[in-house]
Image 1 (spheres, helix red, strand yellow):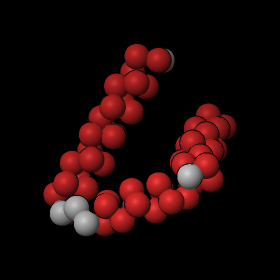
Image 2 (cartoon, helix red, strand yellow; image 1 turned 90 degrees about the vertical axis):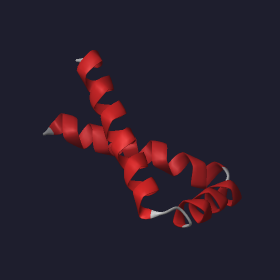
Image 3 (cartoon, rainbow, N blue to C red; image 1 turned 180 degrees about the vertical axis):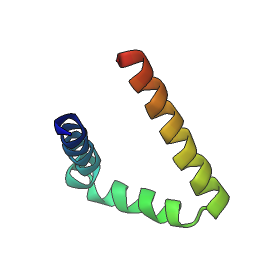
Length: 60
């Protein structure tokens, strides 16, 4: 459980970097994301999960 919480904390830190360092860029990226179709957003989510699982597999 501790590892899951550490991973979650690291994810929050990484995801907070762009809005902290460059709020305008983050806002523009988020605006573009809202204009994508549902299928495109799902594909991005699936791709992210698969890449994460592959990384976990090789790093463990």
